[in-house]
Length: 169
Picture 1 (spheres, helix red, strand yellow):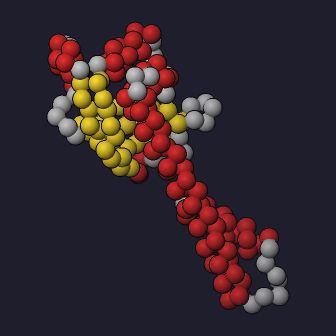
Picture 2: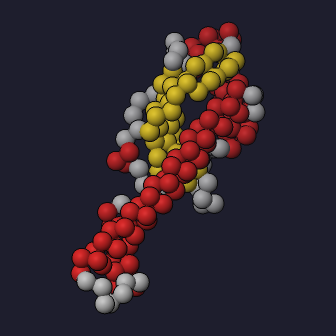
Picture 3: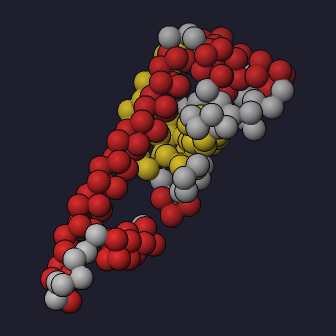
C-alpha cells in the first residue's frame, strides 16, 4: 500500500502541479490528491472484499441446495485433481442435509496477496443419519458451530475459487 502511495505522490508531483506554486502549496496539493486516491483504493478493496466472501457463501449455498456438481466446479484444480477426488467430495457433500454460513472472518491477512486470501468460516451443519456410517463418522463434521479455514485463489480467468478447506489454519 505504501509503495502505491509513493508512486502516486511522485506522479502527481511531476505531472499536474503548477511550477509557480510554493513548495508548501505543492505538498498540500499532493497530500489532498493522495487522500482522494487512498479513499478510492479503500473503496475498491471493500467492494472486492464483499465479492470474495460471496464466493464462500455461494459455495455453501450450492451444497445446501444439493447442487453438488456446481459447488465442486467452484473448487480449484489443486483440490479436485482427479475424477476420484471429485467423486469423494461429491459423496461427502451429498451427506450434508443442510449447511448454513454463520460467520466469515478474514484470517491471517499478512499472507494475502492479489491472488490468495484466507477466511475463518463458522458453519452450522446438519448431516444425514447415514453419514454416521462413514469411515470417519459424519465425515469429520462435529457439533455446531463447525469452523473451517477456507482459502480462495484466483484462477486463470481471474475468478475466485475455493483453494482449500481445512479444519485448522
